[in-house]
Length: 278
DNA sequence: AAAGATGGCAACCGCCTTAGG
DNA sequence: TCCTAAGGCGGTTGCCATCTT
Image (cartoon, rainbow, N blue to C red):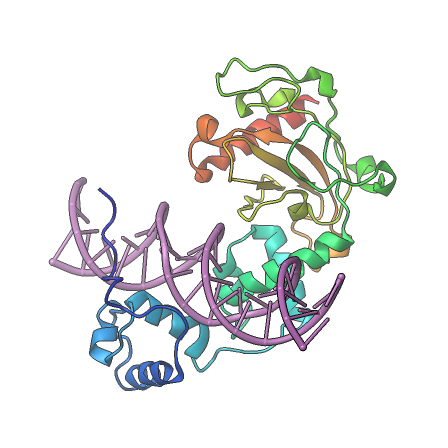
């Protein structure tokens, strides 16, 4: 049995809010506040809307402190910087931008920043990774970070079939996290590790003892990942253009190997072990 | 000028977390 | 401690405006 809906969808209006509805909601909230209960609010206010819809309309559009209009370059820089550090945690990013909502930031990222930066930052991924990831030519790489950072190298020939039943063969490049040492590594130098993967569910996990950032795509049981060794982590004031890292990449089967996303620390520990063994 | 493609963004969906009984 | 309902959040959808052919 599924979760019960928050309201009877056959009895509430959906779609774009009319000016009259906006005014009704604003008037009600100005007089009474939310009362700590959005679900009950529409009935009290005389609106034929779902409580969640009212909350969203208020928080994303009607609040008096909402900043409408185009994002500034400074805001764009903040978004890029934070996205790089923490991934798609839009509410956290938006909290650093007064007057902007998580929805604003998310839309701005998806419609403007992502495309803009994809166009300007080339990326390289091992050929064994079969996802539709943008590739760059070898000539586009530089070696400045390679000289300083530990470089992981392994031949693509070292890919092996896994004892796990959900693995595919070694021609696809799909590997299991349990056999992570067989993934193909390729030193890459690029400017913004978030863009090595397609998909909208990137996340990161960074702490002081593990200066790595991780991206993955979660729309498939087999998930391409990339691990950036961020030498600049913790250095204040870095810009996107200055941001560089080494990358290992491959396909990580997350569900079967580790369960929930929150366990990505396990992957980090494995990858750290790999780094130490190279 | 018209039709299709693309972009932008408001709104919805559904899962996860939290708070209170 | 458990259960339930509401809040919060990220991902996705769908509509409308604009652009391109």
